[in-house]
Image 1 (cartoon, rainbow, N blue to C red):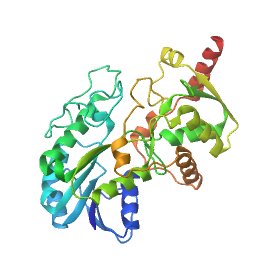
Image 2 (cartoon, helix red, strand yellow):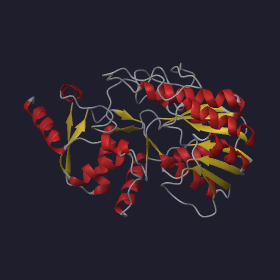
Image 3 (cartoon, rainbow, N blue to C red):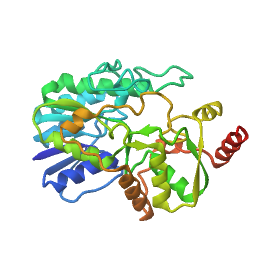
Image 4 (cartoon, rainbow, N blue to C red):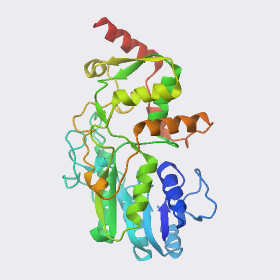
Length: 345
């Protein structure tokens, strides 16, 4: 099996390369070569996916049985379209890692494959679908851009030659966004920890290694399809997640649960200031049954938490990324909100 991984140096791309190598596959990676992992025995093509010349040179390095695209998160649809067109004759099928944000109903409603998607033309530029000034709702710009990326792949390859994978939140070793690392470091610091919302609130983060394994699985199968990729609904809760963070770090912390109402009254930024906390009804109601029917498996969240802490404790650090700075609440602000919650009884 010959596979091209677009990306292949960071987080999910790195995990995909490791999974493919473990199966004895011949792996080519395409990225700018500026950061991330280097894998002996992997054919490296250094280039920029926004360059027509680099894409042409990449296509000449083929053919491949499959392409797995892990690096399109910050690329506009027209860039995905150009890459898909350049590679259409050099591969049998295309695996595009998308997001549940493509759904028009996310995060307000429960989601299943087949639900309506956001608008997003296959040839759209990066300015298409921008959020209006002062917008406080979900990042529709991101969802529209990724929906356009999906359409670019489907229009080029056809639905019977591409797999669209739509994960929600991905955690695990090498995470550069900073959600789980922030909670682990906060747990390790101890003291009174602002725990958001309700301990029984369901969550559905998934381990990066499980997403990578599934991406490689579908790449090995001719045909195409669409799968949401998330942990089972109702299996994990915010309470069990934070308890796991305390357990693996050994931090002398106490979880102090503060209601959604108090957090909203204090203007706490959902999704980032207290990572994984969000009040929208459907954010953690993503039906991934088709993925499980296709062989997807999801390890216990406690294993993801432990392995990430072990990775951090070994002296590792994520690839620097600007999104990491948005995650986590200021210590003084945390104590201010806890004091306000106590005053309410």
